[in-house]
Length: 144
Image (tube, rainbow, N blue to C red; front, side):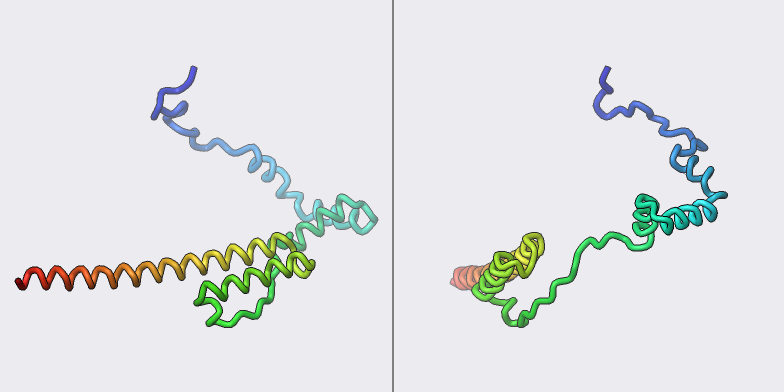
């Protein structure tokens, strides 16, 4: 039977004092942590691939992203036409294998964000100019 909209199946929530199963198991292992770590290292050094993988994964976290060095002039980031050139350079770098497709996609997304900001600033300036013209024309009509 489904719950009525806006009603919780457990309105009182989780009872206080209930320990999460994972926390409970971790608590059981905690007193043995030094010995377990020593054993994992020992097994890894003896050639146990899984123990070795476990030790290395804990020592060296997975790299999420790598840095990409780009030389871009600040003035190139202010003109949409020049952003097109930067994006084309990124596409060429992907197709020649200099950078990965995901790196090219990241560069393209950054360039697109910059393009959108340029457009928003341009629209804002044009809107302000139009409002000024409209206010001036209203002022002229009010003086008559």
